[in-house]
Structure formats: C-alpha cells, structure tokens
Length: 456
Image (cartoon, rainbow, N blue to C red; front, side, top):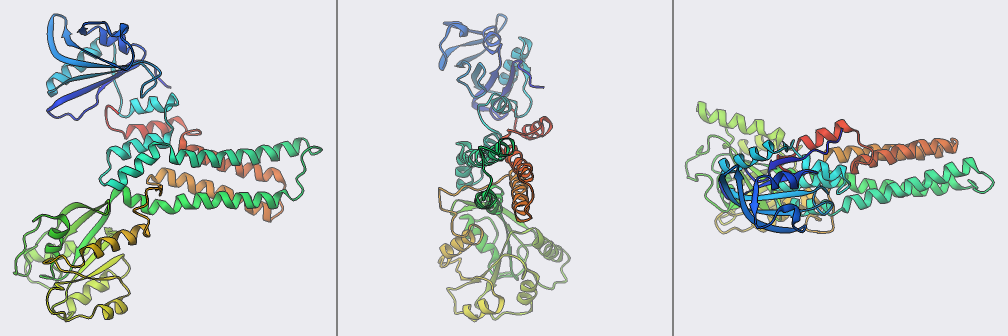
C-alpha cells in the first residue's frame, strides 16, 4: 500500500565533504523542518522554489548553519512538498540533523522511495525511473547519454505509440463484433496483419538494441591474452594512458591478472591483463596461466596479442584454438620492428579481424578502438539518435509483447474468429504496459525500487 507519510534521507554520499544534503518529502515536510529550523522567515511562509538561510537547532543547541531549498507540491520531484537541507558535509552533522527530523515526525526513507513516489504520483513512468539508476551508475559518456534519453521519455514515446495502436485495433474489433451493421470486418484480417507486422518491426528494433545496450551499461569485459613478452602489459598501459602494469624484457613478469576500466569512443572497457600463456614448471606462474585460461569464458572480447617480430609458435596456436568461438581481435604487436608475420595470411587463416599495432609509436591504436566499437555496436555507437535498451526486465517485456503479436498473425493465417485477435492484442498491450509501469504489480514495483540507492 502506498504511504503518504513524510520521509527523509541523506541524499549525498556518506563521506566527509564540503556539503551534505538531506531530503525530506511528504505532507508534513514543511511543518517538520520548521520545527528544527530558525531563519528570517518560517518555511511555511516562504514561496516555493526559494532558498532560505538559517540554522538547525536541537532545542537551544545550535547544530549547523544551513541553506533550505523549498519545493512545494506539485512542483517537486515527488510531486509532494519537498525540502532539501544543505548542511556542512560532516557525517556526524548529517546524522544528527536526520535524527532530529525523525524525532519531529518523519521516518527514514526506504531505498528508492523518493523515486517510487515520483512514479506512483505520475511524475515519471517506470522506464524513466529505472533510467535514473542507470544514469547514476553510468561509467561511460554513451551510457550516460542513453540514460538521459530514456529519462527524457524517448522509450516512453515509443511504447505509448505502440499501445495506442494496439488499443485502437482492439476497440475496432470489439465494436465490429458488437455492431456488425456499422463496422465491416471484410478484408480486415489482411489490414491488421500489415499493422501488426509494422509493430513487430518496431519492437524488434528495440530488442536488437539490447545486446549492445547491455554492453553499453555494463562495459565490455575485455581479456588481453598472449604468450610471454608479446606486449600484453604494454598494451594495457597504452590503452589506460598510464603505467598500470610493470613492463620488462623478462618473460613471465605478469603472474596474476590486472584489472583496469577505460573508455574508448565513449564506451567503457573492463580490461583484464593476464599472465603470458605457456608451458611452465614455475608453480606461481602456472597458477596465473590457468587463471588466464579460465577467464576466457567470461570475456565479451579477447585482444589476442601476437609478437609480430617472431614467427607464430605452439603457444600462439594453443591460445587461438581456445578462443576461436569468441569475439577476438588479433593484434600484431611490435609493428615498429621487422615483421615475421603477414597480416593478410593471419586474417585468412583464423577469420578474425587483425590490427597491426605498436605500443612504442601508437600505430594502429585508433584502428583498434574503432574495430572494438564497430564489433559491438555495428558502427552506430556514435549516433546520438540511437536508443539502446539496457534493462533486462524491459527486454523481457518486449519479447513477450512480440510473442503475443506473433500469435495474432498465426490466428489470422489460421482464419480464426476475430475475438482471438483481441485476446492476443491485449496480451501485447499489457506486456508493453509493464515497461512503463501501467500494468505492473506491487511486488515487482517494490523489488525494482528496493535496488535503488538510499536518498533517491
């Protein structure tokens, strides 16, 4: 059941900082904050969307010097009366002010409860609510831009349009069945088939974007593999633009995995540098080699680094046989030296993209970066107009809607009565409604918002 009591929470990180913000929302928020705030004016007497200077008191004890931001209903994030208290950023100060608010009648908000109220009060739909957490956790520029697109209602517009079309067709069928004298269904199945196919195409575009969208949100899990001294650690340092890994001429320098997150062309890469793969009697090195091989299964992309100044050997062949079914880019490293490997021959032999590369003079770096983004985003990664589905729940709803619309086409092909069309059309309508929260049940809504951070 939706509660209308007043809630409060610390909205900024629980670390010492210059400023800390406490958010209060609900019918009694102004009254509660007024009970601990002393300024030139009472908050209740102030206009909405103004900032008041004053102090927080616990009885006669001064607690902090603050600024109070006033947002009166319905012009606030939750559409309720909302107050934000800008305190000094000490953790003890924030906790003290929060305890005073609770003592005055507020309660601590549950994770995501401010956003949940915004959703329940019609301020945002569920897809926009989910995009807020994606925006907060964005680790690349493109992920951030995609979240902003969803937050601005891009997905909502598509879903609403599809649902309107479905509802129109359902209403037409029901009207024709109830009043056949004024509504003629002759030739209608063929007409409906064309419209449903068009809807499925729109849904397919969104479903197809999910694989790229998931990568956009989580980052590309990228594994650097190669035999010792192929230049793996140099590659990591080059991509991260800093000396992240120790580089020496001694084979087997890297004994364990090194992890780094970088951004290329606006996309996050979660890079893992591994021990050089070779037969070894060194127990510690062997553990690193085994760990590198075990990491292959979890990788979205493998950068196979080959020392192009030396012919391929059994270690190179062993690695390539292990990764043939993965997305792989073969880097012919040390292109600044005399090459012993022909790029064209390698490309034909293994049917994998090949890039000549040098960590010394950075030859091939831009080519490598472009190949990575093209491999995962089909060349559209730079398009600001592309909307990616990043949420698996939304992708599942889209798939269920497509199945229901496909059932409509089957009913048409099998010349079933028109009321069969309506059943599956309404199923699709409801599945699409789950994306925006129009038809979602309370338990699922509670689960979604429970995954939000505190104070949001």
